[in-house]
Image (tube, rainbow, N blue to C red; front, side, top):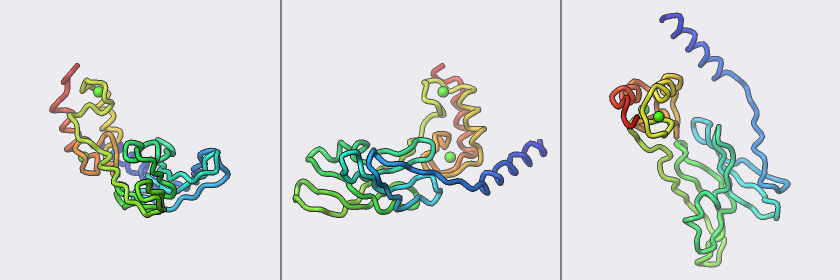
Length: 177
Ligand SMILES: [Ca+2]
Ligand SMILES: [Ca+2]
């Protein structure tokens, strides 16, 4: 048991020390810029030209890739407004500020986008297949000790995968199966 814990710790250490460069790409245009990153390094915001040469604000999430905020939050832009540049993101990854076109005033304006909590607490069904079983238990065990925003294994949404999340899975084990 001690050896197992020790090897997990060394594994984590190696991961933290690994150098990496990730090119974030563009939306089809010839230029993009990253402007800010969340405290845990998992979320980046910036802007990119699309194939038509228009500026589009983007968010990139580790493991999920880059998304156009104009598409993800289209329901907030039904009047024809556009989010053109994302300049900064809050340390927890929730709030994004930038510049865009406000159709209701016809002006180029600053914006504040509240993306709402990326985490929603649940009953332990990590893979969201309707059943709390060993797959969910394993997911929590593999992610045990992780911290950050938007982790599906962080069942109670407190920013850490720990014994509280493990207990949620165990307590609801078999539910919906
Ligand atoms: Ca499940
Ligand atoms: Ca948690």
